[in-house]
Length: 467
Image (cartoon, rainbow, N blue to C red; front, side, top):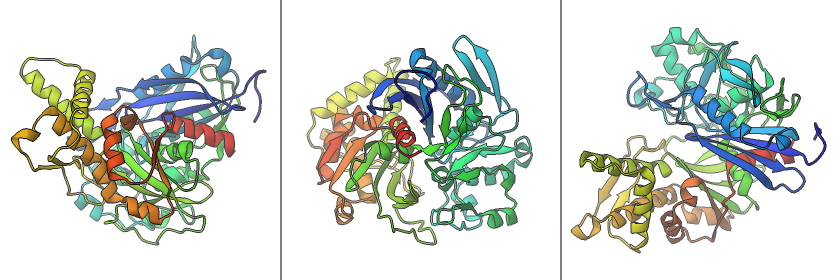
């Protein structure tokens, strides 16, 4: 690791999530997190494509990133020797040669989006089932789904073809940040993020170029592929106090980085409940995924590091289900002329649920459907007058979130695969003791919680350990 200034050396870890940005400084020698900042992006946008579209303002995301970085001590930023960037998988942002404009501020040089599209996130639903069925079959073990980068670009190709002519490059939001920091004319993408886009063969590490070209896909937009954990380049100028020439890793997936931050043993399974939720465990080094996707399977095999794989049950229903519940309650109260803050509603719901140890109410918490069961939505059964209190409904909702995960990857399957304990992490799990109680009821394996387990920590550790 090169040294730009005397004193302790640091790795800057960046995670660009669905709703917030987090940055931290990891001290190289002790591997301790010494500084951390988090900002909500407030980047959600309405889209002319309708209710199913999920888009975000790239400028808002970049602004939140700069707020976080500039809030870190400048005397430590000047000692950063490496930068690791992770972020929300599957989504896509498009840009061209003017996609980034640098400017000098009191905090140093920062960049602002130039000619970029909105970020179409992993939550996007415009690629409905019939549209996906009309696309060519990928040469990949991973099934295609709405919100995947290649599916979204196909949608633009067929519905707004002229729109794509404005751009020369595409990537995830984290790929865009790395390209901006390194001054890359053509973006680089890790196998982790490429696999999350679709039409990528993880065995040979290449895009399905023939299939895509024959189907009219604009392959000129696709990033070049790099091995996960490698260096994409160096900062081509000083950034918010971080020195010019600092190594920047190729962007990684937030799931894999979250796992890396807290999987102390290969016999650990990692459960993350944030906006969505994932339960996963590491597969043996000789594991190879099947040739074709199993669209009805609840388990997918995602590339990890060193060409190994994670077995992943990735549900679309996590903390977002609870947020939806809070929004519903807030709307009801507004209709009665009351304006109660979201945090107050959430806190009272959890408090009420803690007083209820058991409920007969059953909530199937698949409000946002599932990729392997696209037609499945939420359902409430076994309703009785005694189970309609706020505590009963909140308890049943938390149980439903955990039960859905267990149905996708049962505890017995984990044990049979050699898993000895579950490591729980994620913002929704950390702030919700009811979720923890339901988790411990449903899964019989020992469970430990890691408050510091997150993607920003994980990507910093990857840059420290593996480059």
